[in-house]
Image 1 (cartoon, rainbow, N blue to C red):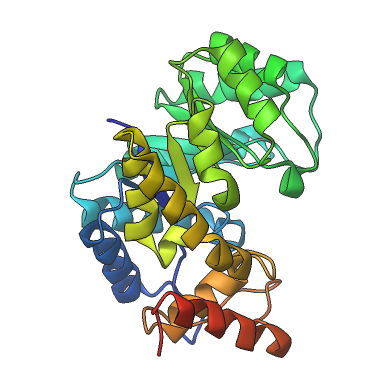
Image 2: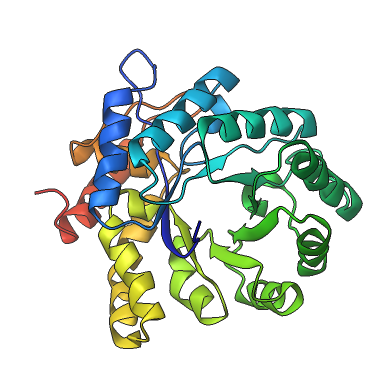
Length: 294
């Protein structure tokens, strides 16, 4: 399994009845691969895993793995603020055939560094599957500082990297410094993909690549080939669409955008609500600029 480049944090399409739309989901996975994406991440924040029961989450991961057919790595969302629940979800991900899991730092509980290390150690001991730690303090209320991340890298053998969603380049640089090059740094912030690559990152787990998989993959590929001019041009090109994808809580804008593109229905599960009317025109303008809709 090679983790490098652009990985899409997949949306989960729903039917009008609120069920997982398997046909649309499989089609979205296939389109992503056709467009050159480097990897896929089902059942993360963007995939609305927080509103799924365990059976449903395991089924969605399995659908993704089945459709991928080992063409790209699959890193399945399996985290929780309950260690026992995270272990159960990780077992489901392993059974479904995921290559690795994405493990969000426990939210609400606000564990100490010792608690964080213990949480990830317990998961790794129960289910020997590579894990990527997900640091997203804007959602969890907890920022895993570089010194703590270094402990996780050292004391949790199955922890192979981190999805860093802070957008803080100083923090990201310190993670590379303290954890070393074998501990993979992935961007969790679409706005700062290129800067993060420049300080030692290996790729991105992206929301925007749901609608622009080719461009995000090309940006990463250009950087790794040393074509900085192309990478910089692509980085600037996607900034407007990045802003559009976060005018409201993710995944509201990206799922709405995919519905305008005819790729899935716009259905969301409560407590998420449809895109507000005031943001419809700006979103459509950003999509038209990228020639994604007419």
